[in-house]
Amino acid sequence: AGEAGNPRGWIYLGETYRDGKLIARDVAEATRCFEQAIEIARKKPWRGVVGHASLGLFVLEYDRTNDAQRLLQLLNQAAEDGSLEALT
Image 1 (tube, rainbow, N blue to C red):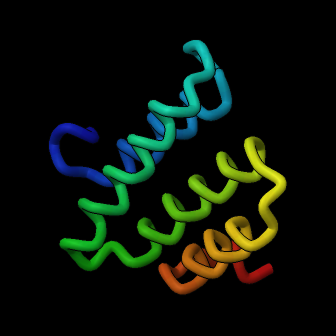
Image 2 (image 1 turned 90 degrees about the vertical axis):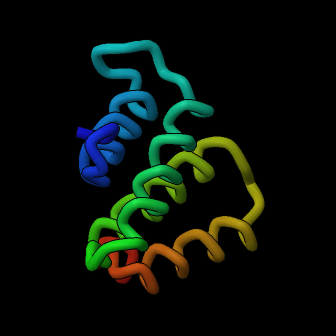
């Protein structure tokens, strides 16, 4: 699905790598998948999908850093990109 240009496929793959379900956890690959989803979704009217992928990046970064400024920036970007979860 991801290679066919479906950003949701990239998100699902990113979540799989991020969570370490079915395959070994790979933060770098998860990040790449979420970034690919964002890139594809911004070219089409997939606003909510961009927000979902942006929120995925936030979750990844939350696991890796104590940088509150960076986390706030990613969370705000997810909200701006249409993630309802980021608003709550």
